[in-house]
View (cartoon, rainbow, N blue to C red):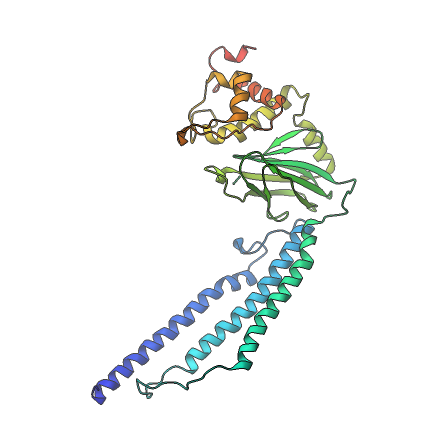
Amino acid sequence: MPGSGEAHTIARLMGRRQAVVIVVAVAALALAAVPIVLALAAPADLGGLAPRGEATGSGRAINELYWFVFGMCAVVFVLVESALVLFALRFRRRETTPMDAEGPQIHGNTRLEIIWTLIPAVLLAVIAIVVVIRVPVVHASGEADDPDELAIRVEGHQFYWRYVYPGGEIAIDTLVLPVGRPVTLELTSFDVNHSWWVPELTGKQDAIAGQQNLLRFEPETEGTYTGACAEFCGILHAVMPTTVEVVSQAEFERRVQALSGQDAAGDAQLALGQASWEGACAKCHGLEGEGDVGPPIARNPTLVDEEQLTEILTGGQNTPDIQGYMPPVGRGWPEFQVQALIEYVRSNEALVAEGQGDNR
Ligand code: CUA
């Protein structure tokens, strides 16, 4: 047993330590509350803390659910953390309390235990019910089988998005949509899983090979919305962004007509070839085929040999040496897209060898 003077010193030291603990606890609480304060005080986009979907009914439904769950959690957080800090202060050991003093020994409290089991159960049930009721609103936009509805095929590829309009027109990475018209995206993949996500328009949806997932929404405001692939899909997952341009109906028709479909020639064909080059080839091999993640391919004869090019585009390259792997980037392309790519390569001096550009 130490002398009384020594005990007094220890008690004083302990008291100081407790004070430090309390200060740290309060500081941690304040820090934890920063996101809540930011979320409540900051404008709509909240630095990435809240959903941005205000451009469609689907996006707004997601926002509502987000804020509902956020509100419930915020109330619980504030109550629990306040009680924690209050109790730490209120029931801390005083300097006058002996070091070996013990608090009252309590064994069980049935009423308390029932209450603190019931409250979270009820809260979770309320969240579940509201979410189950509201989630269908996220997807439904207009009537099913709406004759006005625009169906667009969306293919995830390593590492680009391929959009096919109802008339067969093809676009890469950039999708143009008319304002005020319900749209159904028919998502699929030609290799691994991807996920299409443009947060301002609607929630994310997986693109999976051999399966078609639908994403319905109605863009209400003209503008440019950016999104990304939200499913890790390989080494260049990060360069799989997408852009959705919502424009007037007339502008939409003009833009889609300018895209290349089956019979396109001239500028439209070159544009498709260029988009295919930039989306499917250049991300790995460099804009001028100079090599990047993939090897240099500028002036490679395969680029203008339709048969060989089709083979590597649709089959990829799967060697025992992982360094030599190439995904089948052009799987699902119609012949005219391969031809468009070849036409673009021929038109690009950086990509063709001397004289190759003129050969047919
Ligand atoms: Cu496609 Cu990540």
